[in-house]
Length: 145
Image 1 (tube, rainbow, N blue to C red):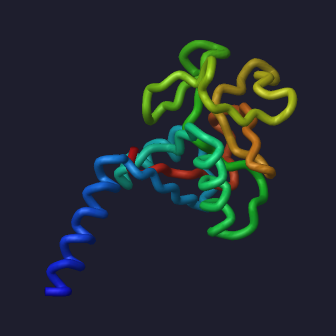
Image 2: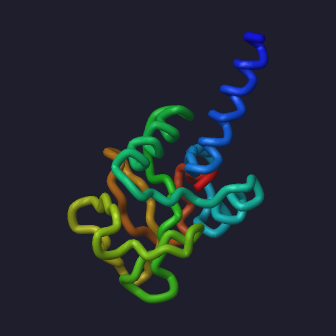
């Protein structure tokens, strides 16, 4: 009887996670450009990390630290490649504007030299805009909603 109860509890817990859309993050230390990282995340069944809260930002930082020291820059899933200055989470097709959570580094986004259209996480878990064709330290994929 105890094993049936345990099984039922586990099933309900997994159902609750699925219904409430628990999001997990995994960092990959591979030097690659934004759109290559985006394609790889899609192939793995996820998307480049979309960050909707301070808690998720901390989870992304932890995912990066889990693969070693947090050095360099890491792609996350934000871009303004369609309309300059209007960033979206590419994996969710969701605008990063108004009351949406943002964690820009001081002076960012700045579109330096007119070609910084993708978002990366820098040391301190702050965001910067950076050229999409930059080969960064790695990237972070999100899985779930």
